[in-house]
Length: 117
Length: 159
Image (tube, rainbow over all chains, first blue to last red; front, side, top):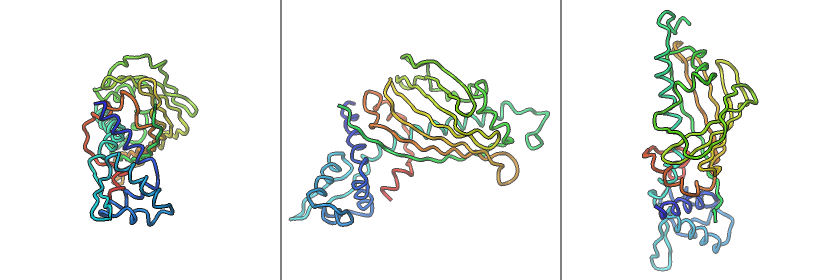
């Protein structure tokens, strides 16, 4: 469980940078080499490599070296833990709004139909 | 050491209720009504002190309460910015989990006559800044919600 918390921290850290999010967006369209990932960003190759390392450490991205090229691909499983975390809030609101519907039905005054209230 | 990070998320939930906007609005406007429907059944008394509760439904007023969920004590502190009876409610709120500030959010609840003329459409828009990945012991329990629902905000990175 301690590992889970550390994993989640790394995912949030990785997602907190706009450049890394752009890289994830690009990888959502399919695998890419490190230099391809850096192309739309105005940064040095060394900086791109650093970002890829952070993405890889978070588990969001997997890399594989084929010959002289390192190919990156998305690992959607890691992103799911961050999604679940935020979706707690959304689910909470949804459950409360379901309850609101029940409450409105329970408290309706049969003598005054709602469409005439 | 706490790793600092912020994750932003916006979600919109729409619900239709077969009741006039005045009744739907009233369900948010008093503590009695809110208590009657606000409990989703899986909340408990907080294990730790979460401060005084308050319900002051007016512009500038606060709503504060504490609750327990999956072993974590939460504190909710909201401030109302805009209240138009039968039309909309705008408020911000911060959340603390076991004394750690975990988020700051803005919620907008809009009430509109349903398209077919009967009932009310409620639109709940919430924009949140989620802080530091819920660093600490609460992180794992928060993840146990069990929902597999995909969130637009993050899913778009994969689209």
